[in-house]
Length: 116
Image (cartoon, rainbow, N blue to C red; front, side):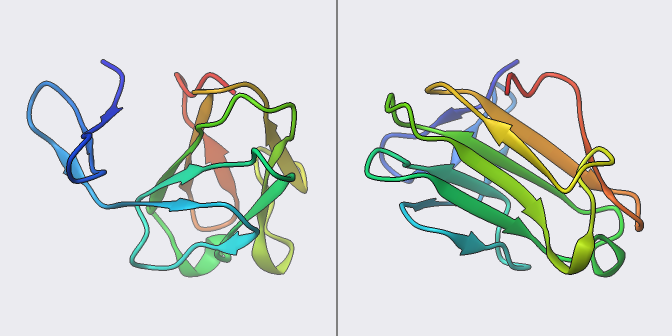
């Protein structure tokens, strides 16, 4: 079941009342331990989201969603040479498309159902 932003809190919810901490960004950003979900608004310009080093975030997952309808891309890249699905970066195009990435301790892996 897809996650949808709660209009009051900004947290993403599923039908089982799972709440995830989220934030909205409009410029390049580095994800931190505090992040779970990042809503990216690339209406004004392309935005790059930098994942932490995969080796420092083993078993950690992040959800990144493009929320604007502009043609600007959202690029997902790993810090310190960490790969995303074996590549230096992945791209999200299109409003409401997203990517869920998970670290196996060596690289970031895209989990199914992201819709990038």
